[in-house]
Length: 179
Image 1: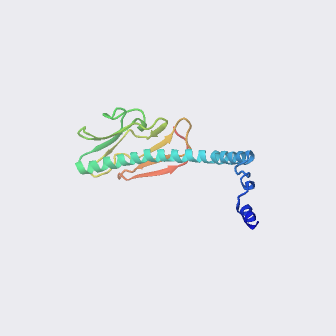
Image 2: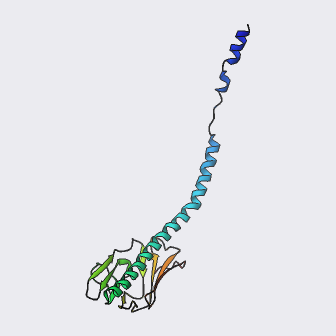
Image 3: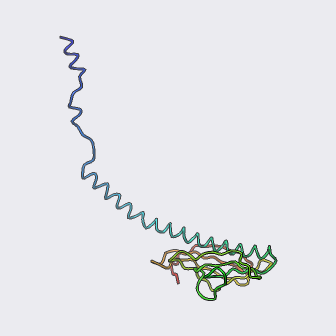
């Protein structure tokens, strides 16, 4: 008889298997609502971060073009020009820097070209070209403004400043007035 009792105790019961675990519909809906609120907050921030990255990239490309033109002028011991160019072969007299730019020696040799800025971005300046003398000095002091013009104007822009000494700096502003 003691053997029967010990077998009954050792046997598993079905009562532990009937309990199910999982999420209720209410718990699932609360999770979805919380996730939607977090995404609503994160997406605009992510958009600003990607815009800032694209603006920074364009501004750094311009600063690199300025540095290349200046260093080539010193290296070649002749004037080198950085100018806006739509076709990559000649300096443009109209339009903005967003159409692309070239670095060209005084003998007409194209040293470097840069393609147009991505659609919706605008690069403006008061000058269409910046010439560097063999001493490294610039012919004009100018500020190139990089901003987003469409689909909506961005809340930030980058300024590439070129001094008469040839020094270049990039700064961030939050004007958002792209024109």
